[in-house]
Length: 548
Image 1 (cartoon, rainbow, N blue to C red):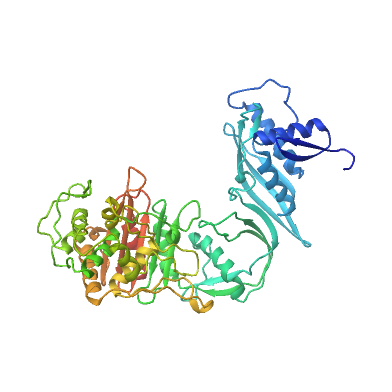
Image 2: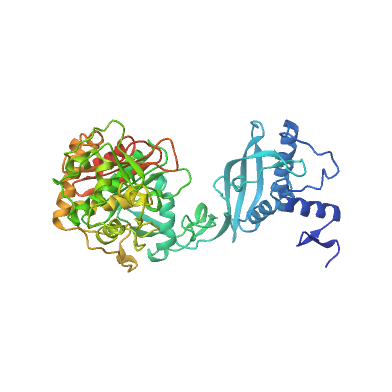
């Protein structure tokens, strides 16, 4: 090794230290301990309690100074995770090619310090300015007692999450100009919740849309929500590529209504489809994490599941729309007691239509015990008739196509009312409604399969008589039942089903709603949004009003 370079083994880790041995040893040991390292304070008295104002200022000043100079290891030593901080700060200069860094701290709020970063991105003779805001928090190191930056990737850039990094390079895929069914250009600026979806479409179809790549600063994500690679998130374009034109099935009007509707309720998602074709007309999410829960969510759908359960009962000859479906106050299934919503009057003479429009849980629990039904009957109905739970949907982007497992015990009954082990998302339930009212399963899709030759999923759909009864029961629910308030004022041929799902012991149930108006079906959910008509109902109604 060259002059001034020494080696050491610390806890089984082989490390290379450049410069003075004292600094190097302290830095390595502190990094292993998860307390950073600065070469100062090894002999100081260990402090406790929150850092004081002076410590916050001094730590922040030292961290920023090293960062500005491109001294990644030195800057990382002022954090409580020198290893991760060092890797990301090194990539900041080497991979993201960010230089001329200037950091301006704002007014601290206790131990939290906001700041503004100005830097220059340079690549292959091209340069461009970048400016953004972030913040950090100073904490007391657990083993050293030093004041240290509490390391989070968001310190380097507010959009970075664990495992992400920054990279400047020629685009992996050419940019796209995504357009709706009427030719309207769809941008993330105008339709914010489409941002992650447009990034995914570019990743998948950029090379098929006819464009040429540019040079960009992007966030390279660790992995997607389903464990596979996630699309890069562009932050800055140094050299414009030539965008290719990618046609989607989205309706600009329906998408605009969906965007506005979900913004009214936190953690909400909605999907609208065209039942006669399976084309997705709108998809919107109101979430801080950017997760496309509308397509990829996996949660209990509550009583919207009764559409599939009712189909199973009719298809197996257990009852019919006008046949018996008594609604007692409680129903016990293998030692588990199920109840109805508070205030629901029992009705021993109820028909299936009556119990459906009022969403009587006990009526469905009682009926799933009838011959010839078994543990796999609901699963078979969902898979064979509605195309769910076979992991074969190819929408054009990542999606989850529902899960209705065959189970025994109390969960068999719970599954029938959308609890237990059933998992769905708004895409699934919009498709369920589309199948219910047309009798045909048409797999939803966002991009035409003609573009890449993919084969859409198939299922045999419903007998005409079953579909007619389901559609009529949904019409009654929208005009006389639990969906009446949410659907009021909508003209045309309308129908709906409400649902509420108790999830993870939350005090408030998730709100679910699915409905149709003419040749549009839509479904929505709002986490902890209450009953189906409370939050999800108004979202669906707004989209149907715009698109139906």
